[in-house]
Amino acid sequence: MRIAISTEDGYVAQHFGRCPEYTLATIEDGNITSREVIKNPGHKPGFLPKFLSEKNINCIISGGMGKRAKNLFSEKDIDTLVGVTGPVEKILEQFSRGDLSQGKDLCDR
Image (cartoon, rainbow, N blue to C red; front, top):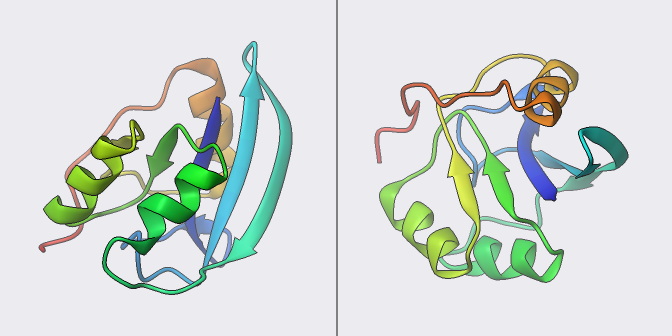
């Protein structure tokens, strides 16, 4: 399982497309086996779903995401978890244990 977390200053960013960076992680058998932080390559309509699909991402975690983006990720068979807040390391641990749940979407678009 490969996940991407919208990241800002070590915390889950409020808006997926407009965050400064993404934390990408691989989780195998409940263990985080790799992680890297990459700069946001830019917020252009339809670009991020394709870009992250090419990086084999299976799930996006963010504070918020617009409906159109959710639909575009769904078309690429990428799940979205929104309404998530907190330190990225804590979120990674919760997700790897299967304890992360979605909250209220923080994006009003």
